[in-house]
Structure formats: structure tokens, C-alpha cells
Image (cartoon, rainbow, N blue to C red):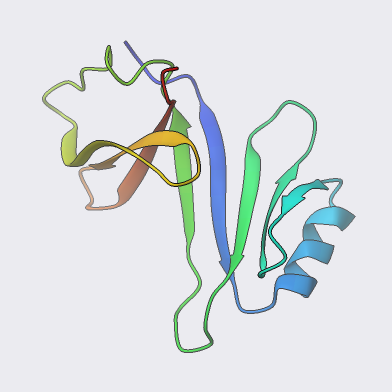
Length: 114
């Protein structure tokens, strides 16, 4: 079983308000917000953006999450190094981290089975 494209992009920011405005100006709508400097933006049926404000002493990063339809059926081949196996998250998905040949980490995201 292969991945099915990009599920989400996780964006860290030092300024929630400015970053929220940036994505809204690009046509993204705020879908949900916890009111704590984080929220989910969506534009149509494409990947969603999760924006999280971080402390000024941390370098903002971006993480791409690839969609996996079923974590139990996903078997990465030998070219894929598994950094962390699938685990349930606090935000309602199952997530695995893999490392590419250059050492970058990629998130794979699957739904939690009911």
C-alpha cells in the first residue's frame, strides 16, 4: 500500500495573527482554532495547514504529512527508514515518522480505526 498524496502541512510561527492573515489572504479559511495560537486552515479539498505559534527562541519549521489510508496495511519498503512506528496522536490520527535518504523526517498520517 502506498501513500495517497499530501494530507497536511504543519507550520510553526512566531506570530499567529500575521500568519493566519497570510493564509487567509491566499484563500484559506480558518476551519478550527483552539484560541491558543493554533488553528487549522483549509482551501477546498486540498491538504490542510495546521499553524502553531512557538516561542521566539525556537526556529520555526514546516512538516509535511503524507496520507496513508490504513496504518495496519502500510508496509514501507527497504528504501524507507522508519524513525517511529505508527502511534495514536492526541488530535485523532495515527502517525509514523520516516527518514528520507538525506536525513529529513517525513510524517505519515492515517485515520484511527473506529
